[in-house]
Length: 361
Image (cartoon, rainbow, N blue to C red; front, side, top):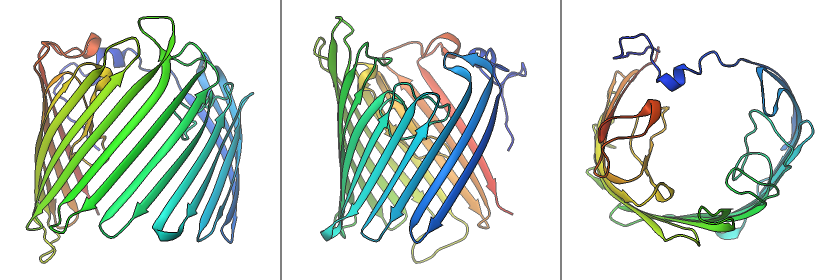
């Protein structure tokens, strides 16, 4: 891996990032034991981590966890329990394969408020700790259509960063996709999330309601050209404030040199797209996916009023070497400066250029 910088001072970070260099080191030790037989798995893990500098949660962390799973053709069950000093966390999952192609998944979780681990990762609303919840999902697929969705109910036993007392939340998500006889694909998705937070204009704990909707259409021409249109809408509501709204309309087109009839080891593709967006606040920002480089996060957070444009090319030679190039630009119509502090840009537009070269030997 190599990097090229246009800066001349030898520092390839912002001033804020550079001020945090050499802040901390960490030492970790891990032991994991696993036993598997006839679809049954049992495992145990012991972990010890130590930081060079103390934090609010401490400096030395130890943990222990145990897990098991049972996998069968019509169902599977797994569970894991973790212990820290002095907290406890547990998560369990049951997957059922029902008749007529339905799959049902149920996940229960309990993370005590005193549980803490540096690298804990599991299904949660706000981190592995101070949470209990139950999620149920359903999935159905046919030859041309598919549907999947879930409902999640969660509760925080103690105050969180956004709520000064115990709070409860609810989230519902659904996605429907259908392939037309002409080959076009339509996708409709939506999400509703209600979560209690501190009201910004009062001392009350109020439910914040956030709704998101997306309609996406894909059309393929001659197996080589793909046209995509997408519309996003989002709303955000707090009882003590007015309804805030956001919308985004975008389209993209792509071409690749390979077809089903004439495959080739040298594949080239070109993509370009533009999205217009307008949001009344950051709470109703629109998240838009765009084609990007491998191993990178290609979702853009669009907030305010403006345009997002990108162009990308991928060149592949001899099936072993690939060069990705991407140029993106975000132009704002409602501001003369972008961001603040060390990341401040004194203009109404910003550009990003990415290059990636991959060679296999």
